[in-house]
Image (cartoon, rainbow, N blue to C red; front, top):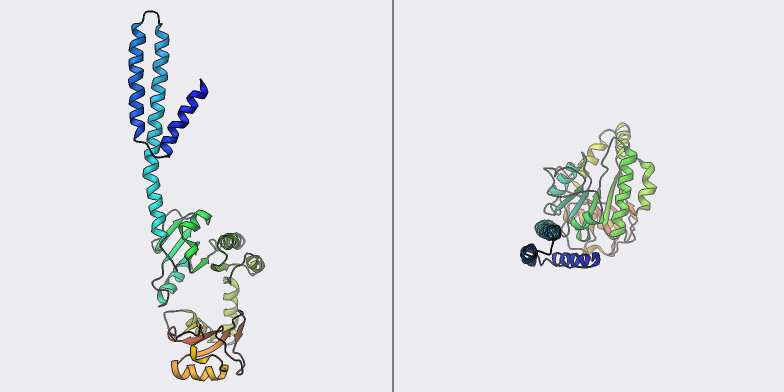
Length: 321
């Protein structure tokens, strides 16, 4: 008898899972109607005791209540699920966007810098953070720790780059540990996604490199180096600050090699681009990813190389590849 009731219950749940909840009210009415008729029939029979029809009535009521509960659960699922899907659908169309993992005092400055560059001014920025509510400055927000689910909601598969921030500047060890774990999760799911990571302690650099971070910025080490440089060469930090900030003076850009300079020497390129575009070439990133700061004048440019230039705005010349 128990197996029969269990089979009936699974059949009803199957109706709910298939969202055929419109059949459940009819089933409830059928059970109540048949139960009522049965009660009236058995009550009229003198040979049947009152206890039996009371048991039958209780079973009928329990079955009807169970079906009503199933119906309510199904209807709630139909209401909640479209909302979740709609939220996911709003994020999924974003492509070539930036994803910011974590939230600290530097997040606002990062958002400002992205907005001030003409190439990234209109790019969407999606924040993924375990915060009680969406920060007012964050354009788009996915609540929660970095998991496969939140990464899918932020559509990391189509992102341009992701920035992993340390969430606790007061506890460098915990902050770096979370950043490295987040980096490992990102690179495991999306190996080709360019990932920039903020660390607090330089001793954690090997672990972050093992997590396959593309770029690592150690906040404390960079600040210390700038302070020491300012003491040795007063005024140098003003140039560094100007080159790194988008809202004042000239900036430092990484650009593709222009069509017309392939095969020429670095010295020829230095003169030509300064004359034609009023920009200063300060380095080369080879096609193999090797950095050459102030390379020799005889270095011959290739189409796969890229240029580090200082200019008032991002150069717009046609790339060689």
